[in-house]
Length: 326
Image (cartoon, rainbow, N blue to C red; front, top):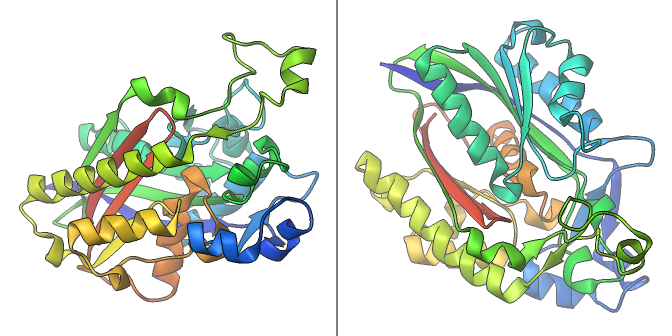
């Protein structure tokens, strides 16, 4: 059987660190308040003069090196982001040029925090059908540039970063066992950026009203994430005939420590089997899962034969899961 295997991963994070104590000086919040409600201690913010595609290219080159392939061998670049370099063309186009993947098809997808899982699902289909042999999937965000830094309900949550994975077709049992993606558009208003599109074009009014920044109903997103991430994870396990106790590592979207703890409790998987880095990076949206995966691999946690569960929910609301035999 041909499966889609993750052959190499990479991550890129800005050097600038913004701590909770830094935010205490600029917005009505405190280190204790942020830690208690989110588990976040610090986050990364991209330096001026650098763009989303710069971070994505850095992570992608590391993933190609880890996979032992030249970027020129990549057939397709799939990039998940809600913070592209510009509205047109796709951010993936700039990454294609920066890494030298010059023969690759390149496009963006917008599923916010679920973007990497959506990208895995698309790449898996491409490889299984034989359309492409080597696919680069990227999750990248520069959320610091779409935040209202006076809104303590959002600015404390997010950070910048990129993660990437090279996917190859391979005979055997290792690789992606299944992916499962879902959307409920009726909840779009719970997490969005109101202005900047055709529905609400940019005007002096939209700028003055800060309508180009992230707006979120945190209470509702918490409930939606807990319910849907848990169910998507259960679907992935049931589909493949596994129990939660057989999972070696859960690589969950790092949105909020309380959400992760709730999912762990509902799945009856010990929190010790979740790789956690939210305390260091905050919520990096599309980049969250690939950053966590690359870090877990580097730390030696993930070993051949391990069963990995990926799960996330983001704006849309869109969510999903994937089960991988490493």
